[in-house]
Image (cartoon, rainbow, N blue to C red):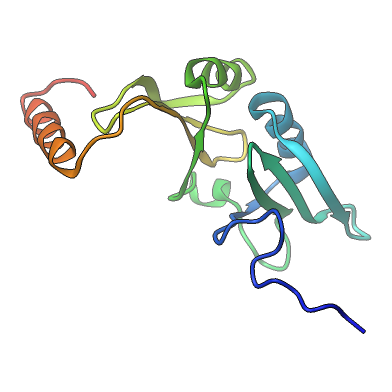
Length: 160
């Protein structure tokens, strides 16, 4: 008889991304090389396409599959409207590693007004990854003040 299952499986968080990719095998290799991902599982269909794969970075899992059954990856739309955030101990090191592996810089790595050292890159599949290290924990009032200063500078034409 089957054992009762936990609502959130062991090793998962309540939100787990599922990415649809035009070339899942190649992108999985890139995630391993550029982001240090660990491949946990891979299921391949009779046509050679990846039906389901799971990877882990740090304490978080994410899933992926090749485009199939009428689905579309971000390249069909010119990129993804969604971003993934990857918090690490050293954002400079991982950001440079990702760029060295072919990621396209979308937002240069910098100290951000909200307290993170962060920058964004696009992976070869078209997904945006923000690579960040939390440097400061701000109060809501500090965050509001810094945001106001940031938007004031932006209105004056300062680069961000």
